[in-house]
Length: 454
Image (cartoon, rainbow, N blue to C red; front, side, top):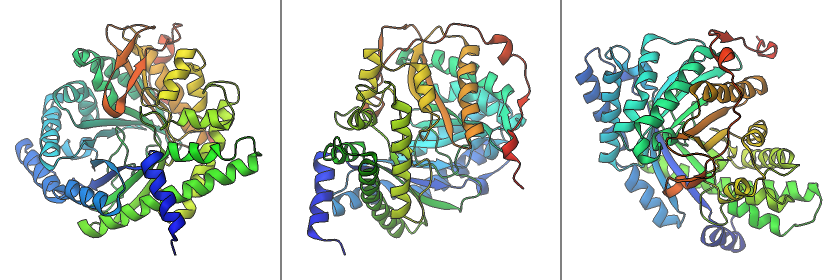
C-alpha cells in the first residue's frame, strides 16, 4: 500500500525536483500500409497514423490532470520508412514526400515529434536504404516534427563503414540545408550502433519489426530527484550512495509504470516498456552533470567522471528493473551537452572536452549527444567521430549514438541557441588531424570475436 508519506514525497519530486514523464510514445507498425504507388502509400500512412494516434494527446492531458504528473511530450514512432517506402520510392525526393506526409499527420494529431524516418544498415544497404539516407537533408529541411535515425552497426554484424562514410556527408549536408536555423536539422538526426526497437526518446525512436501493431512506451526522467536525494547523503560511503540512487530510481520508475498502464488502458493499446532515462533539460536543477558534481566532482569532466557516471548508470538500471517487469529502451543516464546546463558550464570552464565525452559514452546510456562543432568540420572527420562511437557500442555490446551538429558559419568560442528542450550549446573544438584514408577504405569492420554466441 502507498502511504501518505510516499504520496507527499512524490508530490515534492514533481513540484520542486523536476520529476516528469518525459514522453508517452505510441509505436505504430506501417507494414500494412505498403503499396507500389507512392500516393496510395502516403494516403495509407496518413490514415493509419491518424486513426491510431488521434486520441494520444487528449489521453496524455487527461492523465496529467488526474494524477498531477507533468507529461512533457506526446510522440509517435513508426516502422523504419526505408522498409515501408522501398516499393514506391525511386528517388530521394520520393522519400522526402513521405516525410512531408509524416509531418502533416503529426501536426494533425498534435504530437511533438514523429520518429522512424529511418534505415537499418548495420551490415549493408539496400537501394531503398540508400535513397532514404540521401533524402534526409531535404526531408529534415522541409519538416518540423520528423526525426531521423540510421543504425550503422551492431555487435552481431560489425560496422558498415560505407554507411559511416555516407552519414558523415549527410550530417554535413543536413547542416547546410538548415543553415538559416543554425543547422537545426542535425538536432533531429542520430546514428546508432545496437539501436533498440522500443526506444521512446527522440531523435532515435522507431517501431521495430518485432513489435506488435501498436504499443505504448513511456520515458521517465528525474535528474533533479536523484540529485536532491544525494544531497542528503553527502560524504557517505559508496554503499550508501548506491542504495540511495537505486531507491530513488525505483520510485521514479513506479511513476512511469503508473502512467504507462493508464495510457494503455485508456487508448486500448498494449503497454510496452518504461524507459527510465535520466534525460536532462536546460532547467536549473534538472542536470545529470549536477548529479556527478553531487557525487564528488568539481565539474563533469574532472578525473573520476567516467567512474561516477558508470556507478550512476548501473544503480539507475538496478532500481528501475525492480520497479517494472518491462524496463526497456535505453534506460540510464543521458549526457546531451546542449540540453544540460551543468554540461554546458563544464564545457565553458574547460573541464569537459569531446574526447572526455567519448570516454563517458562507454558507460552511459547513449553516446555523443547534442554536441555543436564548427561548421567547417570536414565530413570525413564527422565520419571518424561516428566510427569511434560505433566501435564503443559494438565491442561493449551496448547502444551508442552520435547526434552532432556542425553549425554552419560558427566556430569555437561562439554559442548556438536551439530553444526549448534542445537548449543552447558552446561550439566545441574538434581534433584537426586527418582520418581521410581510414574513412575512404570502404567495406565493413567485422563483428568482434565475442559476438559468436550461438
